[in-house]
Length: 268
Image 1 (spheres, one colour):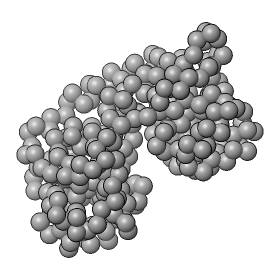
Image 2 (cartoon, rainbow, N blue to C red):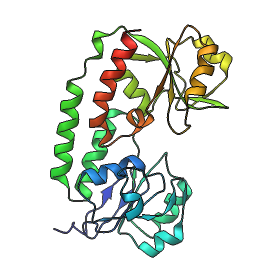
Image 3 (cartoon, rainbow, N blue to C red):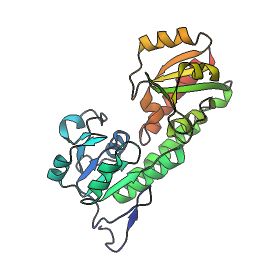
Image 4 (cartoon, rainbow, N blue to C red):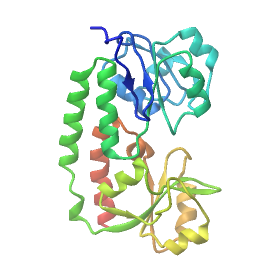
């Protein structure tokens, strides 16, 4: 069933785009939303992804690589001639989005909390004519998160690090921060978005827990040892960044991970 040509569709930053029919050639520039498209059974309609779209693994060899999330190969996009590009305000460069929008319908997501992530899933289901799949996924996410009960654990403060040298943390108005709140943890970093922080300033905030994320900076056991020496009174924990930051179908898988994490944090 084709879309009404007279109707305009708004993306999550309020931009209007027109789709003369439901898209059959989709490029995804967002790793978490690439996984979402796969979960919606759109394998035959996704033709291009970025090199960072690692899930599902098999798509890395089957779908055309259009470059990095902030360094799109525009010539390859033109060769693919998509009828829909899915992007993100934060993960992709505005320059690329503006340029691509002059040629193709570009739907831009802007997801800063749990509820906006659910709205994004619903919207992508609508524009790809995958409402059945999106509604099933939303039901599963609601059901899974209804089973998690962080209130049984003592409230602890935390800081979540996404980069090293310089140290970059996660602050307010971010999806990760909202996930932290839903685990009944209190983020000691209340600065906006992703503030850079000195070691001294982080020590002044004195978090009970410091999370070292696996992405975008790949914190490892050496970093774990270092931060343990710097913060002897804090729990230092290597965590899976996908579970905290990937909105989309990853949200239904993350609950089991968080259940285990809360037990580990509550037992120490």
